[in-house]
Length: 273
Image (cartoon, rainbow, N blue to C red):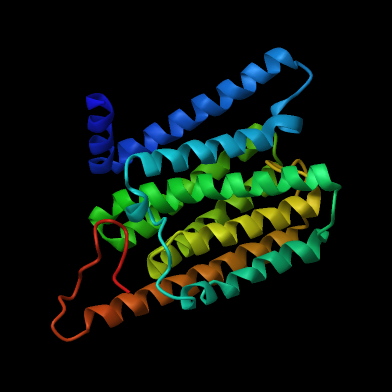
């Protein structure tokens, strides 16, 4: 019990080490589970049959660790102040239309649809809690702008390795650029909304639309048209500007209130509503 209490306290005070621990622990549990399944069923592969389970385990372990360390509130797993924060996310739904117009969205049968939906939830929760939750909270000690841009660069770097995992190289290059822009947009909205819930919900919809358009999750061997890649990248850049403007306007409005200091961005990764 003392060791557990010490670890909880330690990780609350050291978010960067907590992020590394959560990343490693989730991978050990996830890959260990799939390896155990494969010893019983060697015919099952992560790429084809077990990827959704791996994503679900990653998300479950990361979220469980956040609640175990009592950092859910600081991480952003908190309710929004009002429905207005959810409405601010509406322009982001344009990205779903981009995907829908390129490939369409279709049903792949009940079992496959369930797998795709679980994968979308798993990826969204895992990535948002790690990047826009734990890491963003850690970088807030250097101010909100550092917290917006540095985790976004790490987010893009993580996606740049998709080509090494068998994905299309051209798609991976464009994806690295737009994931940086998307990271900036979602990080700014995370601070503007004071909650991860709208961000996670959008991420689920985005990945879900992508998965239901192709019938597969994970990296893609084929890239969309060059025009689509360029337009999608520009759309993400526009949303990044939109989100940064919303955050800046809110932060400036807050700093100019009578009797309030000019900069009081909270170190836990939130700004007052």
